[in-house]
Length: 273
Image (cartoon, rainbow, N blue to C red; front, side, top):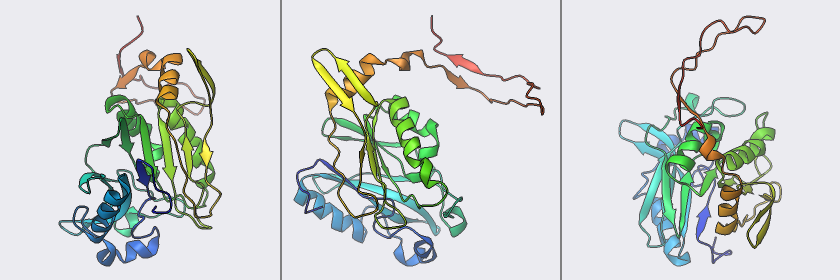
């Protein structure tokens, strides 16, 4: 980070302070720390002041009652805590076994914070698979960018990672910065714009494309956000106004031949007039 000064926000991967893997979860009693006065906070709060920047880093958080959370903490350029977020969705598929290794799912509200003119949403790795959380961050909390610290292992789930990042960015019209660990088992960090391809608006023309890290090699992936491009995307493609939000149990049963066997009860809000 010191080798790459001059940025507003630095995002480190999931569990960056402890490392991601079975060994971390097995040693959770030794590696876990509090979010606001532990060794990682003390180190990164000083670094945030030194860099005059926001820093988002990952810890294994220990709570009262010996419960453990995959947590991401944000400190500001003043060296004080901004927020912390406990991962809501735990992954127990592929090479991951978070719940099975004694980690607890977070139950707090989704997390967003303000960073020098931008509203920034925060979620962690497997949270990517759940669009309801992202819609809450983008539509309810007004996120312009969602930072997504991750530890995507190169298992059967790895090839779909970037497709999900693209979908979340474009469907919610937000920048997405998805950061994973380096190394042969990880890699692939990506910064994705709120649209793909050309966008023309007034006197501005944008050709939006994702930025990719160099495979698994350690690097700093720099993402420069453009407010004009974000506004242009939202003006040119204002599909939020056409959204229908469903409230109710979407219970649909089908036979082997696909016939609907029961009604789908839903309450529809905001229908187009």
